[in-house]
Amino acid sequence: MRAMILDVPGEPLRVAEVASPEPGEGQVLLRVHCCAVCRTDLHVVDGELPDPKLPLIPGHQIVGTVERIGEHTDGFTVGERVGVPWLGWTDGECRYCLSGRENLCENARFTGYQIDGGYAEYALADGRFCFSIPESYPDLQAAPLLCAGLIGHRSLRFAGDAERLGLYGFGASAHIVAQVASHEGRRVFAFTRPGDEEAKEFAREQGAEWAGSSEEAPPEELDAAIIFAPVGALVPAALRVVARGGTVVCAGIHMSDIPSFSYDLLWEERSVRSVANLTRQDGLDFLALAPEVPVRTEVMPFPLEAANEALEALRGGRVRGAAVLVVDAC
Ligand SMILES: [Zn+2]
Ligand SMILES: [Zn+2]
Image (tube, rainbow, N blue to C red):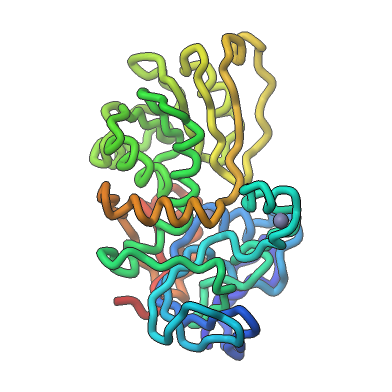
C-alpha cells in the first residue's frame, strides 16, 4: 500500500510502498477513503509530542470501509463505513477507565501517534474504538467530525452554559463548534490571527456575530472562551476578556509556554482548564448531534501524497475549515 511515513520528527513525511497490515484479534483492516489533518498531526511531525512510534503513519480522523475483520471482532460487516478517532486503545482497568474517564487512561494509545494512522491506503483499528458515521455525511465532510468535531464538542461542554462564547483560532475545530454553539442559542465571538481578514469573514459565515484579532477586545465581556490556537499567550489574553466566573478552556494537546500573569486576571472565580483527548461516549454523543444541527464541515482536499503540503498549509493558517487527505473517497 501507499503510505506517508514519518521517519524522524522534524523532517517531511516520505511517500512509500509498504506491506498492508493484517488485522489481529479485535481489529479491523480498513480501506482508507480519506483522513482529515489535525493540528496534533503537526505537533507529532514537528516532534513536539514525546516518543511517537517510529517510523509512523500519522493521521487520526480516518474514514474508511471495513476490508477484513480479525478474529473475535464483533459487530462489523465487510464494506461497512466507519470512522477512527484519536483514542485508539485503552487498558479498560485503570482508575480513569473505571470512572468514565478513559480519555485520561494511563496506558492509552493514540491513532497516528503510538498506532499507525490514516495517511495511507489501508489502516488497522481496534474495533471497539471505531464509530459508525452518520449517513448524511459524504466521506470528506465526515472526516473532520472525528477530531475537530469530537474534541471541539468536548471543549464546548467544558464551557458550561456560557451564553457569550469566545473562540481563539478559527480553524477546523472552531468552525464546527461555532455552528453547534449557535444552534444551542449561544453568541459566538471569534478571534483570529491579527490581519487575517479571510478568517474573520469565514468566522462570520459560520455564525460568529463578531470577529476580530486576538489582540482586540470584544464588544462585551464573554462568559467563556475556548483556545484552539497553540499559543500560550492567549491564556492571559482570554482571561482578560471573560467575565466573573468565566472559564477559559485550552483545547489543544500542545501549547507554547503561558506567560506569567497577575492574579487579578484569575480572581473572581475565573478558571483555566485543559481538555484532553476524548471518550467513546463523546464520539457517540457528537456523531448523533452533528446531523441534527446540522454541522456542515468546510473541507480543503489534498491528495495523499501531498500530506506535507497540507501540513504546511495548516501551519501557515491557509486552510479554510479542515484539510483532508483523499485516498479514494466517495
Ligand atoms: Zn485506563
Ligand atoms: Zn486531532
